[in-house]
Image: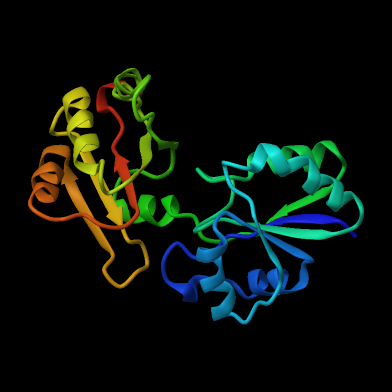
Length: 228
């Protein structure tokens, strides 16, 4: 029976893969991978020999209908990204939407998502939060940051190591250097780091070191915007 699975893969430590994820990846007819070279490391580690096909932001609009047509013939597929859960700041939404429109069953397995451990270990309130993903690189960036300055909920951002310092400085300019925040990088990897403090303290910390790895920024909500 045709079915599309969204399968989370480890954001760092390969041991974070679930048993069921391995079973699904072994059992489907085709694995759609954001980068087959990256995914091959995971597949080889777990002895998964299922054929793979590239599916990423540069080809998803071209191939989505072809994939839906294949699913309608009875094939089963699993979508994986380089790390984490497909659709969370990664390709996935377009294929899921078209599969549902065509009556194809879709199931997302529980599993790794980088922002959840970063949020929980930040020490900032995690009962209410807003996930913003990557900020715009240019157009609309300043307006977005200005709007977030008034947000009362804890904010979650993704960032590259090359723009981390610039982003922290822009956040401090809009929100004030005393705003509480946290930067988590290399989650679950050997050199994982969680840095907590004010935006000003984090700027000082990351100004003195070379930053590598995937970055999650957690920013505390605006205290003056919170209701009693």
